[in-house]
Image 1 (cartoon, one colour):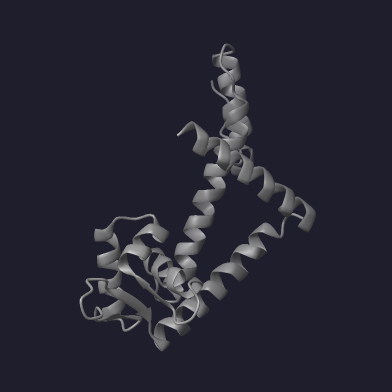
Image 2 (cartoon, helix red, strand yellow):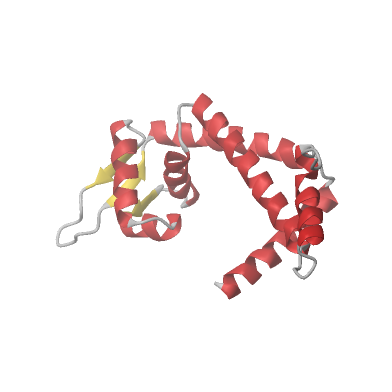
Length: 171
């Protein structure tokens, strides 16, 4: 008879121990790190989705509106800039802008004479919506990381940034 499944917080240690037992020839230290990162990412993503749903928003719309809001006044960017800053395809940006425009959160500005550049700008409703959503998300997520004291939050941020740089170098 096998071992019983562990509590969710111990799942990474359980998996690492099981692989160490079954395949002692393999390195398993990454399991304790990456499995926990995946677990935290899943829980945070689910929580963010629920938080946004309560506000009538989805992650794609938040990404679009946040990108415009972070650009600063006059809160407008070209579709090309939105594509580059959002790390999604031009087609995805078009769909996001179309949805947000139907909801009156953004507006497309006509190209200047002789230009083909389409600018997208936050509307006052979009400005209010993104501020409410970002406030709700960031306050909620801060409560999540407040299980760590401020020094550990800072240290974890530095370590995760280093890990991310390492991943980017391997890609």
